[in-house]
Length: 349
Image (cartoon, rainbow, N blue to C red; front, side):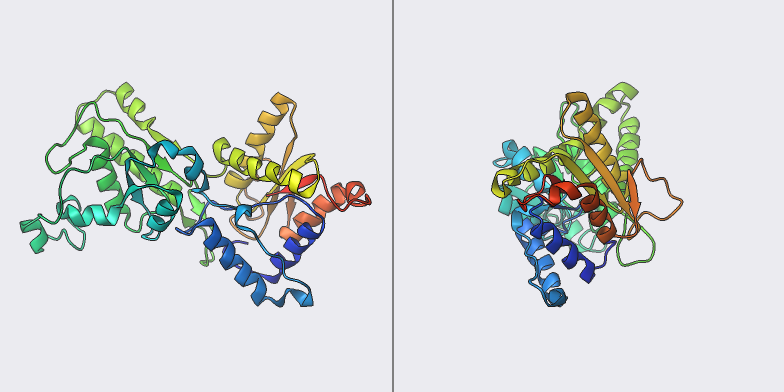
């Protein structure tokens, strides 16, 4: 948790699997890996801890919900259309794995059009590429921009995405009034916990910066406030705590019911970020309450973004770590877990 692997994780996962509880590992990251690659890395980490002499738990690919996992199912209509991929270069591997046939990475686009970023490695005023920008055509007309991970270069991301939103051919036309394409973000987190002792800016910070600059650019072109707001509506968000992301997680859990022979009676979201994990649980619980459906609960842990004294975003329980959180869940459902059937009726995220 919080950017670090510990042996506690192996203990927790083994206890969940032994109890027959539906679960998924949900992250607002992914780092440009496929679900299979991410699961493989976790399984290798679990093996490295030795699992206290017991059998190490194994995480199947379908237990992984990455920030961009919903792109595969929800964006099928874009798989045969040109799309601009933003993020780490290996995000292209995920895009191809999902079946986006005409995807182009922002780095390749900038290489083809070096004048877009005057501060880029191929855009410096003394670079020959600026004098002779004939490295590619200017005919790319993207149907959407897909932000898989944080861009490696915020300036380049803001400048190029603004250009592409304004024009299908930025080198020739500054602004096309009738052009409207979506920008799909995979992670709304302003902050996240990495190896640094304090939280770092996340993809949410990039979206915030892009919105401010894009709005200012539209104002400079003379657009009115209402039209600007309409265009900002082309920004589509995935990732916790967005309901569309949480619904994908619920679908993955429900799919395990038949496999495990159980009926889910409550969903638990365990995480270290109040504004993504706990808010996600609250969003789903509100919907569940309105529809008289299975309820949701959020358990906050102190091993990441959250620190004592911070706003808990309405967490039902605060625990020291994920082990304490799972023990709480087991205690709450001890009667169910004592049944002769080892199949439980709760689910964990």
